[in-house]
Image (cartoon, rainbow, N blue to C red; front, side):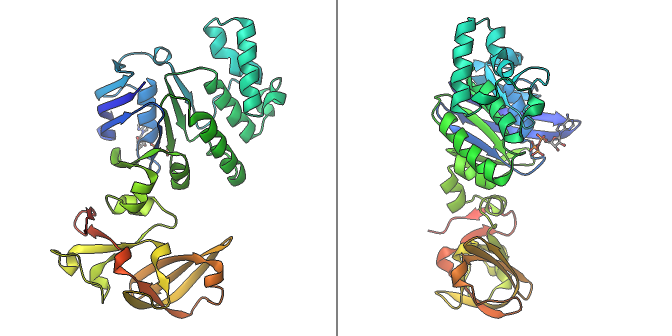
Length: 345
Ligand SMILES: Nc1ncnc2c1ncn2[C@@H]1O[C@H](COP(=O)(O)OP(=O)(O)OP(=O)(O)O)[C@@H](O)[C@H]1O
């Protein structure tokens, strides 16, 4: 089964919430749509589900045109941000409902509910109602309900957004384990780049209704196609500095200094002099993140973010003036005019 979106556009009033999206998502793909709030991710997912009709373009599932086909005929399983469990039903009945509607045998329903509940460690919760569940338990019930269905495609809309950090990481692993090899496309929407990078076999970065770049997590990280992707993928974001503000680094061949910006990942900056050039900067903030630290420093109008292992920077204090080494071999280059990437070979 593949999911194809061909020139899909959706307007709200005269604003394009989804703007000419073209994607083909294959079997066995765990496809993540990553973008900031309001970029059109949910609208796109709902178009695949059939909950919203596009104004232009075509949706195909398994090669069949789906425009005008109601959601229940598309055989998609959707897990919503807020779980959308039926409050008056037990966990068991919430999971079983779709199979009851499809008139499966009672014994078969019972077998499948118990099997999926055991896999998701919710087998002791089957008699409870949704109001008696924690967020993480409710999330697993919503997932279980989707997983008993053998759908043509799984659609998940920020299913982990209500969980605390620890449970989110645990659930991420469970989702990857259960849905990573189901043999049908999984489309997963998130605004969290670390979730996208750990879950996705491919990731589409979306902004203002448009797909900005599609690639593997590594491709997006190593070759962001523009400044937006460079700033959205990777934590903390890449440093992007107009070259006119930086002495000692030459622009790429064929460009003037004023035409380009240099991008350097926080992990690629050196503290102290390294290969390349260096700038003197004053440390304004030190954030300790477990065994790593993020140092914020300013050099005139330039703000820099540097990420290092904690033990490497243990002696530094706010207010210290340090040399920050910028190695052009680690640089990404972007056109100042439109933010697009310049390939330097
Ligand atoms: N029913 C609607 N009527 C009018 N505008 C809408 C409607 N639904 C969404 N929009 C607008 O369409 C754009 C895309 O919204 P959408 O919910 O798809 O974004 P999103 O990327 O999923 O955001 P979030 O991460 O905040 O859920 C936004 O500008 C939003 O305000």
